[in-house]
Image 1 (spheres, rainbow, N blue to C red):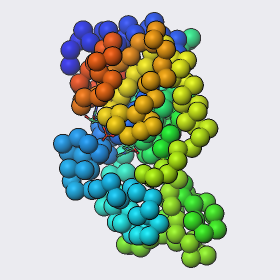
Image 2 (image 1 turned 90 degrees about the vertical axis):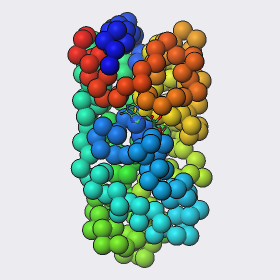
Image 3 (image 1 turned 120 degrees about the vertical axis):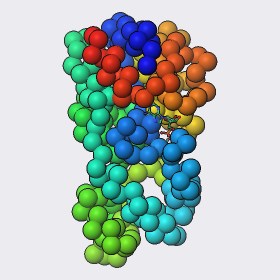
Image 4 (image 1 turned 30 degrees about the horizontal axis):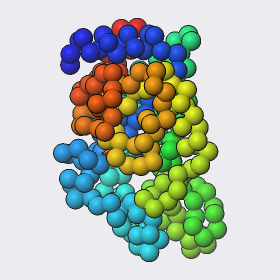
Length: 246
Ligand code: CNA
């Protein structure tokens, strides 16, 4: 890690008043959850986009739940890392207005008590019966999922987690709030996202020309050429180091 880059990032944190983090699956790899597109990610492991496709879920929910069963131990064991906690520390500074727009469904930002979290792709925390609308904590369904079953409500309907699948519309209010936060930002930090899944990946286009832009991502993104600072290091390590300098 280049200490000059960390110093620069700390300086940007110090000067900014409205700081927005836009995070993706790469923000959770240091907590043990694989992302999609890294060399060690889910796609490289053979998981396909069909697993997260709403039409496939409706006709064959066992495809999604087979995936969930395989990765349940990683999701259950995951805890916020030093980078998630650094965001909470940053937000506690006077005059800093910090929000997190996340594509992640794992609730790690919320678990770390980041003050404002906008989960534009929903959350795995709760599930809803697709027949009667009954809502339950997804954790209550783990035993059914672990035993190889598609979890169902007593009415017979299939439970679906409150996650946005491919082919579904994003929650409108959350996405509008996210756009507004990016528009108001004077510092945008893009963390652990390839920015290829739209519309979330296009959110940086809502920023003002005066907004400073930092890319904290190990892979390339379409935004790199427009950024004030690009760091190809692990997000958690860098955020902890930068915030500890404030
Ligand atoms: P992605 O397309 O897999 O991109 C992740 C990016 O993060 C890649 O460019 C990596 O190079 C980079 N990266 C990986 N580890 C680190 C790290 N430690 N520090 C910095 N950069 C890192 O994932 P996106 O989030 O861009 O794609 C959006 C999808 C992924 C959303 O729909 C998510 O719901 C979905 N997803 C979420 C989770 C989760 O909730 N933890 C896990 C896997 C996929």
